[in-house]
Length: 120
Image 1 (cartoon, one colour):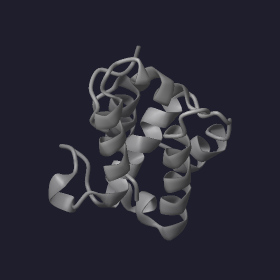
Image 2 (image 1 turned 90 degrees about the vertical axis):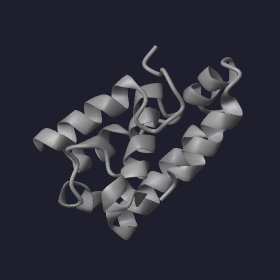
Image 3 (image 1 turned 180 degrees about the vertical axis):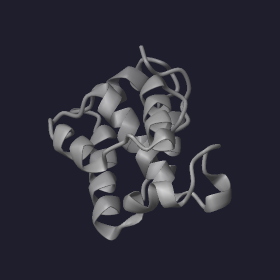
Image 4 (image 1 turned 60 degrees about the horizontal axis):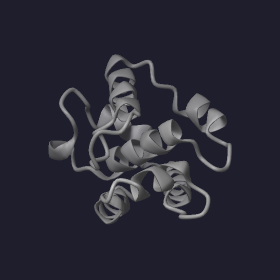
């Protein structure tokens, strides 16, 4: 399982996307094209939640090694709307694998609060 805590960067998929953003290899357009399946899978859900948090974080609250220039594409109105839609999909009780995963942990409400805070 890739998830180990409720924060938007506290899982393997988010750590990988942060590393890709740091080294300049993250391709937002390619990710958007690959992230069209519904229901959204767990790794993609973890990534969109992390991207949503990056889209809204003030410069002084970005993870180490992430600059505002590196996340500029996440902050456009179109991308923010796309992220919001995908994050909301991840929080749908009847359609989301990540929701079902957190439901079994006893930390669903905490995860939902943290995830809502990442909404752009």
